[in-house]
Each structure stands twice: as C-alpha cells, then as structure tokens.
Image 1 (cartoon, rainbow, N blue to C red):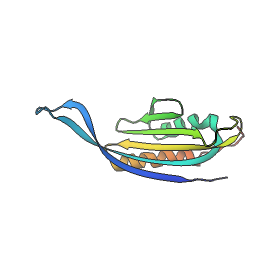
Image 2: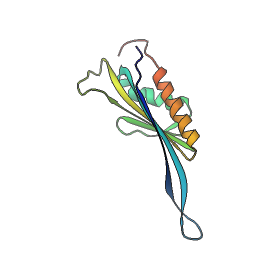
Image 3: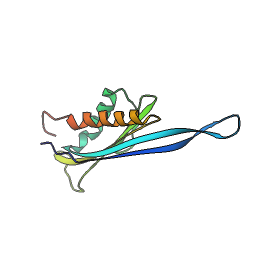
Image 4: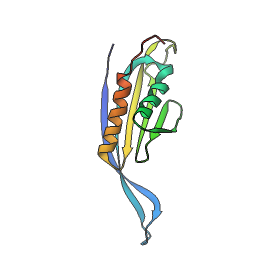
Length: 132
C-alpha cells in the first residue's frame, strides 16, 4: 500500500562564517536548504535503519544521530532525516504511519535539492518483505 503525502520548501539564507577577512568583516557564505516531508506506513522501529541506509547509499556518512533523526554529510552537502509516529498510540511491532522530514543543506541550491530528493526517494521506495 503506497500512500504518500508530501510538502516541499526551499529557503536561502546567509550564514556568517567564523573566519574574519583582512578588513575585519566576517566572511559570509550563501546557504540553501530544501526540505520536504512524507508519510510512510512501516514499522517505526526501522525508521532509523531506513534513514541511515538511504544516506549511506548516496554517499553521506553519519555525522550525528539525535533521537528520531540522522544527519549525514559528504563534505559539501548535509542531509537530515527526521521521523516520528503519526499517532500517539502505536505498537512498535505493527505497521504505523511514520512522518519523515528530509532536509538537504548546501552552498549550492541544486545540490541541496538533489540530495533531499535522492534520499527521500530511497526511503519512499524501500519496502518490507516480512512483517515488523
């Protein structure tokens, strides 16, 4: 059963770097991020595994793993995948609707968008052969 609801956002920002140039002004780098969310019916206990696998498959090494999220980086682009059950009462041993948010962050808007799309697509297309 494939049910996918999605929302996509694109934002550009100016991020101040820690280095200071010769004229004592902080360096600034343009930073673009593309974010989107979707809902996937799956076992919640496998959300982290699906997220890490999608990041690794596309060349992102895990940089940070807070609860309910995985952050990956390839040196120029970062991708964050967060996930949470769609309802408050769920059984971890049964399928449930899981909300995923995938955000690509880079100095290049197209790199951020491509990263987000590839990782998101990998998670959406992944399926189970057994039950939870």
